[in-house]
Length: 273
Ligand code: HXC
Image (cartoon, rainbow, N blue to C red; front, side, top):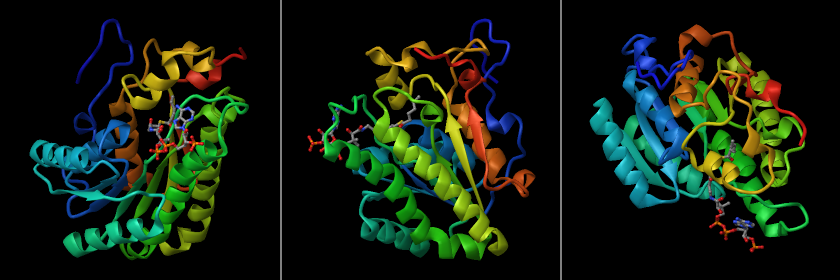
């Protein structure tokens, strides 16, 4: 357990709460797993016994991360270069995962793009790019993995956000993309429930040290500069990882079609600018 100064709600590693080996013989397929929150989510699932394939555009970073995760968890991690905007590349990544492991139990849809831009200044291509990464990427990944996740009676987690619950300035592209991701997850949950597949969303709030949070908090008159912190701290990637382990675990076997907001109650206090 680690605790920062004065925290009444300290960050806890999942291994301090959940049993070892709960994901033994399971396989995780994670887009965006090379860095940030998704890397920490992957590490937590691997620490409980799973093997993983991490997918992204930056091959060098993926390989380095895969090596580090394997060393830290003593489970196998495959690095697969693919752009989630291209369904053929996603299909090839899934094929490679199946050739290596023979199964896919868990999928994290985490690949995402983000930057600050007002509607008036955002180019058509800028809008399209984020929709293609977040929304199309999620759909392509679901399509390509579903036969295997069905066979394993497995589970999806889509990484969304809380930005689209209200009008967040300079975030029209991300807001539109994540609203679609939330809706996609709900449909997946009801269509695939009869096949034993679960689908849930994790919506992180302000998570310290992440690329998204750094970019959104860095500058500009946006509400992200003023995240309220009712629990006295920003989130930690391990807070998201703990939610991930719970949602993939059998303890969540009747939880599907849900959005789990992991934000320390920040959204409830967010005020208009
Ligand atoms: C305005 C921008 C821009 C910027 C890119 N574009 N960055 N417009 N401001 N800062 C525009 C470009 O001008 C171009 O349009 C189009 O988007 C595509 O840009 P490219 O650079 O050619 O595309 P690409 O190399 O594919 O990379 C785009 C990107 C990247 C993936 C979106 O810029 C990016 O944002 N990477 C960061 C990834 C990231 O932070 N992920 C974590 C997300 S966290 P034109 O018209 O010029 O051709 C998250 C949750 C937030 O989303 C919650 C936080 C609390």
